[in-house]
View 1 (cartoon, protein in one colour):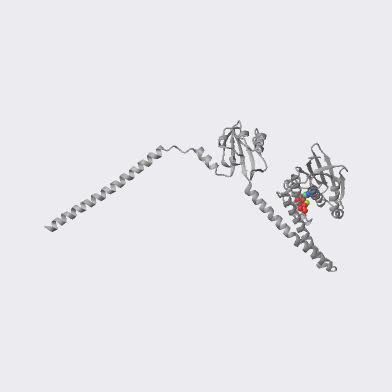
View 2 (cartoon, rainbow, N blue to C red; view 1 turned 90 degrees about the vertical axis):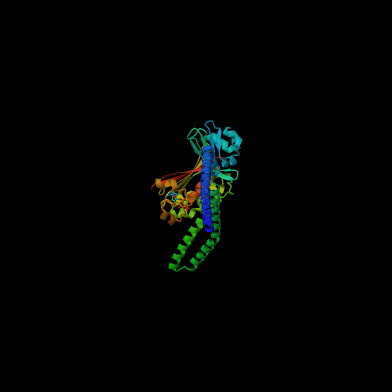
Amino acid sequence: MKGLFLGIFLFLLGLVVVFGLIALKERRRALKLLSELRKEKRAKQEKPRDSSKLLGRALSLIREGIVIMDPYGRVVFTNRFARELLDIKKEDLGKPFYQAIKNFDVVSLINEAFSEKYRVWKEKKLKDRYVQIIFGSDMDEKVLLLIDLTPMKKYENLKRDFIANVSHELKTPLSAMKLSLETLEEECKGNQKAQLFISKAIERVSYMEQLIEDLITLSQLESVNFHVKFESLKLLPLVKEVLSALSDFIIKKGIVVEIEVPEKAQVYADANMLFAVLKNLIDNAIKYNREGGKVKISYKEHLNEFEIEVCDTGIGIPKSHIPFIFERFYRVERSRSRKSGGTGLGLSIVKLAVDKMGGKVEVESKEGEGTCFKVFLPKGRL
Ligand SMILES: Nc1ncnc2c1ncn2[C@@H]1O[C@H](COP(=O)(O)OP(=O)(O)OP(=O)(O)O)[C@@H](O)[C@H]1O
Ligand SMILES: [Mg+2]
């Protein structure tokens, strides 16, 4: 009897447990269903995301400035970088660019280019950043882009300082080496073989000295601390000074020099820079000339500028090479140029120096007939 009761009790307990478990499972399923329904409802209630807002937020993260104007020049969009650099406040949106943008230089650049399709300016300093400014108006809207060049500029400065430091460090040991070789050459008089090797070594050391001189000149010209010292100069004495520095070379090659520079010809330039320009051009006119060839240096005065021309009767420069000759280390014929001691830096010094003085250089050349380099410099305060 006792056993029967215990059996019935256990059976009932089992039933309670099974039903309890089933109820728990059902409840969980119902809760899950409910939460899914709630999620779905919330998603339906949420508005679709505004893509222009998202784009605006994304554009505020980039380190390039963007200003968009309508066809009437009213500012309709700016990103954060542009607002920081041009002092545009949020409330300036909708105002004409000349009121919204607080930088006078940038306003005048936009004014200049407003009816053009595309314009790019050289780098400009805005606050503590170096930026390249691009203006485009292919569509109805006008867009001003500010490309941040500061990191690149920092890298360039590092590179320039490194080259300048290495060049200075190499200068002294090279001079000492050359002096020792020259002394050794004296000591070895009579020993033809030794002299041949020593003269070759002296030639290479001289080449390295020239290379280092050119690198130092270039880094000085590029330095931010470099300032052009403009003054009124008489051209003829400067030309004569350059010719006397190159006299050995002129005599060795039997070059006939013709000077067409009036006694009273004056230029407004930096004496050292103009000396470097003339020296490199005349040096090339001799170096790439034939034996007994002619070099002519002439001067012309125009309305706003003066022109110095250096012409030769040499080998000329093939047309396809002309666009590249002002690039660093560029030589038309590497082997010939190296044999004549060229580093390929001369014309880049010319170009940089003339640029710094606010002028320009032009080249005309005919293969086998000769080359003319023309330097135009503004009259300035002459
Ligand atoms: N007057 C010229 N006639 C013919 N080729 C020329 C003349 N001037 C320059 N070139 C060419 O242009 C190249 C670049 O000239 P650049 O003066 O920069 O270098 P370089 O004369 O070789 O070396 P350096 O640094 O000693 O002047 C030369 O290697 C030469 O091939
Ligand atoms: Mg040269």
